[in-house]
Structure formats: structure tokens, C-alpha cells
Length: 185
Length: 185
Image (cartoon, rainbow over all chains, first blue to last red):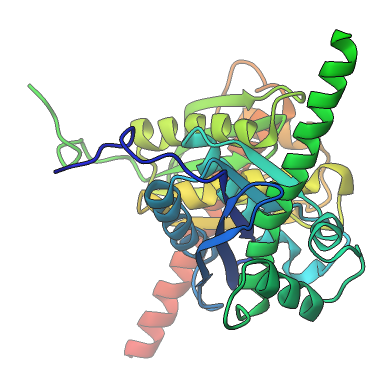
């Protein structure tokens, strides 16, 4: 029997695809859950393209991998790291291009896209906006109750983005609800 | 009678789609021709997206306009302006994202992508890498024998990219041919 896209069972909360953009390594991690309940890892991977490949072909390969996950895993939201121009000048253009491709593909599939800064992600996951990569990896491992830490760091960062989005989204929703209730009095 | 994609009549030279990337205005200009013969304007336009629209939706709208032109006009090559991180820090990330989307779409359709720096384009079209926008617009108008200058500057810049690509590509091909001949002696 074939189950169409409207036949899937209800999900335990929100399913978020986190994207840590990059031309050489692009982290894609999917997490499912809601605030106040344990989160679950759905899938995590790192898409890689060789540095000597034509840049447009690198972007097309990344697009293929991202879109395959969007179609197969049908996330409710896509969380992408916000890229800043002041960091890593040598690679920032490729990183921005990869982030643009991920954002555009999500929008084309009707999935809302949210950008989170690296310090927002660190603060949401570890409690400190200045946490280092290893602290983020450790907290992601603990939050998702994984038996081994996700490697490389791009994989952990993609999961951290998804976790951040669920937790911040939840906080924002509760705030919006509280404001709505206060206004209704 | 239906003419498939292999049935089209031979073109007078190369057809190049020039893309001047940007989130607010993205220039798309198509030029056809070859070195040493008059070039012809095929089509030029500027795609616009509102600044208050969600960035991912802006990229998706631009993608739609770029892909529609790739499919309908079937360029032999796509020339995109190379984006540098040192300029216009406030808007450079959006510009890089838009350029990544254009590059990826061209690659997906099997069309080779070439990047040209602003000074390469200015030098190819006006003879000076330091020409201003008005000089570029005037030379584009003259080279394509247009009755009116293409406006805004993004439209002229997209055409300048396509012209630059045909002229530089031609020079590079002639050089390659000369080297091949010299090697064959």
C-alpha cells in the first residue's frame, strides 16, 4: 500500500532541518521534538564537494543533497546559519552562496526558513554564546542522547541549529501566547 | 509542428546570459554573437524583490525568473559577476546568495558558468578597468547598437557581463588554438 504525503502519522512536535552552510563541507541535520520534551535525532550527514571542482557544479551537488533531504524527510522548518561578511574572508563568499541555495530550495518547497547566528545557536544549546565547538558537540550529543558524538563539527553544528530552532521557536511561541493572553484580558 | 531542443537553427555565434546579482535588483541580459562580428541583444531585464519580503522567498522569486530565462532562451554559457567580500558589507551577503542561486541553476541545466570581476568587465567593454557605470552603459548601448541606453545600471551591467564573456572567451579560444597549433608543429 502506498502512503501519500498526507497519510503520514502525526509527528511528536516539529521536525527541523538544520543547515550549516559551506562549499567544502555542508552539515545537514534533522531533529524532531518540542520544548519540554526529549528531542530525537532523525538523520545527520555532511555533504562534501572537492575544492578543485567548478564552483557552480559544487553548488549544484550541494543543492541535490539538500533537496533530496527536503523531499524525503519533509521538515516543518529549515534553520540556516546566518553568514557574516567579517569572518573567514577567504571562504565566506562560497559559504554565503551555499546558504542562499539552501534557503531558496526550502522556500521553493514551501518550507519556512529561519536564520540563526552562531552565538544564538551556542547560547541556546550550551547556555553561553561564547562556547567552543567541542562544548557545542558535547551538548548536542547529550541533548539527543547519542551514543557517540557527531563528527565532524559541521554535523554537530547542523544539529545544534535544529535544536536551537526548536527551543527558540518554542520560547517565541510561548511569549507570543502570553502576550496574546495578556492583551485579551 | 513541434521543434524539440535539438531542432533549433544554428546561432550566429555564442548566446550568453549575463547575471548581475543582487537581492533587490538582479540584472539578466542575453547577448548573442562572436568576436569580430556585431553582437546582438536578445533580451534584457531586471528582476526585483521587495526589501520587506522574507530573504528565502526573495531568493526563490529570483530563482524563478532566472530559471525561466535559462529554459526559454537556452544560453550556451552563463556569466556571473564575481562577488567580493570587501565591498558593500551591508548587502554583500544577499548579493553572494543571489549569485550562488544563479550559478547553481545554470549548472543544474548543464550550462557552463563563468565568473568575471567588475574590473574585467569594465576593461573588456570600455578598455579601462576603472570606467564608471555611465561609461559602461554608453559602451553597451553602442556595442549592441541600441536606440536607448539600458536602464537601470543593473540591466547594462548584465549585458556588459555577457559582452565581456563573448569577447574574453573568444580571445581565450584563439589563444588556446594558437598554442595548440604551435604545439602541433
